[in-house]
Length: 160
Image 1 (cartoon, rainbow, N blue to C red):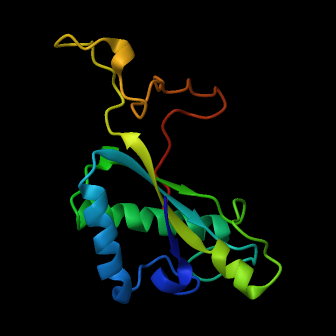
Image 2 (cartoon, rainbow, N blue to C red; image 1 turned 120 degrees about the horizontal axis):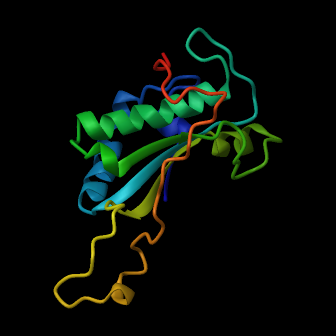
């Protein structure tokens, strides 16, 4: 996991990465591009409420920062979208207390989490490789799409 502090990468209350931080993020992207791993970008905030013209709360800000970096990896660095995911945690996964400005500053961050190999499908063993010889970093769970709730339609209009 690589943690990007707000103070270095984002202006307060903004989800747009600072132009001055693009070269540092470019080095991170270059290192990630060398590996076939899936990556989750996680946005975090402190516990101070935010409400401005762009974001109604810390959930909006944290998810917007995460998706901004995912979009940058796809558009500028040509990452395969299936390698990437975004998550926003608002103030609910702090790394420090929120008792003082220095501690709150540590909680305002975006974490780049390396998850494992990109392939989610398990192919049948081939070329004499037994299933038990799979790498410990290879995901073994099979992901399935949950059945939709009867109260919630399966398709909904995109969020804007």
